[in-house]
Length: 547
Figure 1: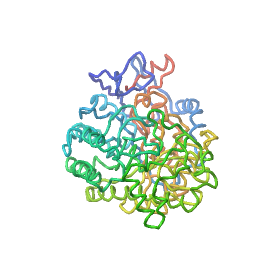
Figure 2 (figure 1 turned 90 degrees about the vertical axis):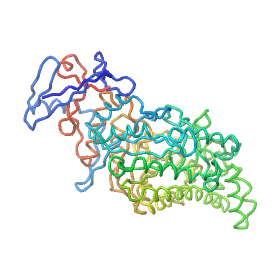
Figure 3 (figure 1 turned 180 degrees about the vertical axis):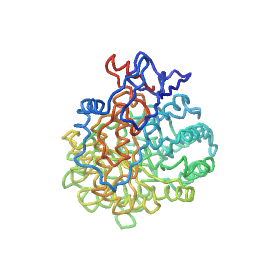
Figure 4 (figure 1 turned 180 degrees about the horizontal axis):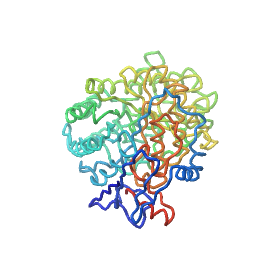
């Protein structure tokens, strides 16, 4: 039998039943069917029922999925003993409105229903500092998030909640603008050195400079105290859901929630791929730390400024004396500076994660931290783009093992991006190697005994990207993935072919990558019919779409 659910939100445009849409344009119906263990598949139609024998159906599937298989088939599959990799899906950045309410709750409800039916483990949502603690210090508004938590619980989905202490806007994929809390911006206007600053004096309001982590610069509290109070408020508000519905807390530690410096800001065209970026150590707090470190080793001159020969945002390594093949990065001064710069970032992460561990310990919720997948110029000796971001990773130095060990100390999962990228897709002049970078991080986390999870860095819907994630999820070289979070839920994800790819990917991750085909009605994993109707005759067979 088939059950058709209708909603007052008008869930699908009947004239366009080829695609799934979500959040912005809900209209239509969702059709669920109970698939009986039978040799025959019944497809419910608006006008008629058609029966197909198993043999005929499988042959049809083989023909229609030939292209999919060529793109998606792995060179080899997960071993029988590999554990399943749960898949989460990131929710839109503006899931919670600027007023603190859940955006378009009926549309969200239908989207979560579809994701659950596809076999997705849960969803990820940003808990924006700029929304929750907007009105004044220590006044928190969690109401929109509370509604989302209850909705996820109703659908049997888990939640990964990001403690987002950064600004939204100005980076890849940012579709809305959510600044830091107004009272924080007021303090920044009084003291611009509270934010990261580059060599030319350009201020970046994305995130509070780690140079003032332990100074009471935010109305009598240190930034670390402010972050801890925020996380403590979240814990107290959602204590009944932690470890159950709320399975994971991802602790933001920098721009885009990542443990890094804002070395490649896209706002106002400051940086463009594949530029090397710039060091962000010129606010007065960072300069004071650099000066003290230089004086401590008797090299006072080294503490007067950052490198003078490290170039500008959009240059290449060989354009600079610092990053070129045998550049300053590899002499005594360069090593001193890079150890200080990366060490400051490590200490920042340690301080925040120590606070988070103390707050969430015993709640049952896992902790995670995100590290950026900076893959451009990876094939060069200096790894310039990684260095400016704070990762002291060169031809001679492993920059990810210290991060993995720091996170492992608190049982924190390292969440790494660019899992979907292949070397062959990258421009040749950028010396990229996302695959080499991922292999290095997998080995670093394995050596440190730290759990590894992954994300895709860019929005991708093609079979090739999903296939690459399946490859990187395996444990044949370094750590396998404990979970994967897909970026991101939007209207395009629910379009027929894109949705079909996602469902197949989720099944593959749950079954160790052994299955490489998605049947027309996907009876083995989800009860959601997939509307990829291409011809009028097929429309008569079945219409089911989710907007």
